[in-house]
Image (cartoon, rainbow, N blue to C red; front, side, top):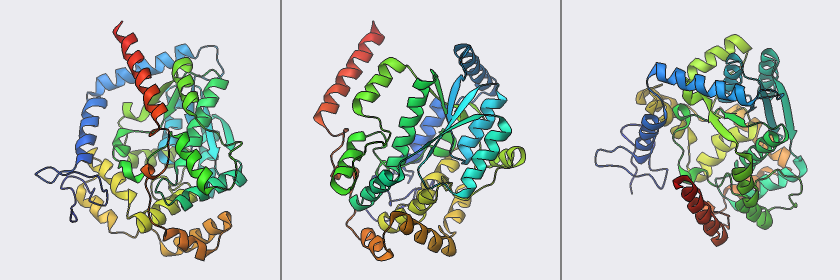
Length: 375
């Protein structure tokens, strides 16, 4: 297929799985439009009522407990705005942060200022850097685009374990349809797949993962059956816009903007700003901007103008390149050698998702879940 860009959003054939209709609209923005129509309540009164119902339920179930909900915080726009809103709604959250060694000074400052102003308790889980460093290097050596999978997996595991420890029934996320409805599968896959992480570490890592917080296949089954945890994407119940949230956070919490999406982490900034576009030809700005186009926050012309800007300021790129190599303990020559390795995909390595055991047990679980719903 030659190069083609969607006529509705700015996704294009750099996603090898993209599909266009006869009018030139892609599958991604069509799916996003369906999600908005299905999961976002359009009527303002009905939306407010749904939010109120959820809040009252959380408060009722949390009576007598130290916390009635848990929020994850990264210092970024979405999670900080969730912290702001849950307090405004009168909830009693415990904030949890996972420090993977890559926090920018600005993100740490944002977390501290916001939670102190809002009077929210914070629990920080610090990953064993010596162990985690080898795991992240393993993913670099595996030459897959899923370089942030280890961090995302650890965050999910830590958050779930904290809900169990504090008997919290509700986990409130900053994930939302308006700003995150589009992300191609090939650009990042396997977030919850412990088998995939183990396989990469076994083949390319140099350390046994003794302390890395993880969700094994059986642990996920345990959480589903016994924990009955409810995950709420709060921002989907609000008239959420990224620009509006930034304005409020700057005014009310002295929060500072840091640039691109998820750039509160130096490594995420380096992965999204340099490794993905240069090694895999994946520019995640296209997905983020396309989400904003579909939700009506920006126009397609504005997105195209944004894409014409440099993805990485040259001075900052040099600084981050030196910092990343120094933290990993590798030379610049070795880093560029890793960049030149043949690209691989999730499907090139073993994983839970592709194992026969997983498929069999998942089928049994889905069958029994459906059976009990019918009876």
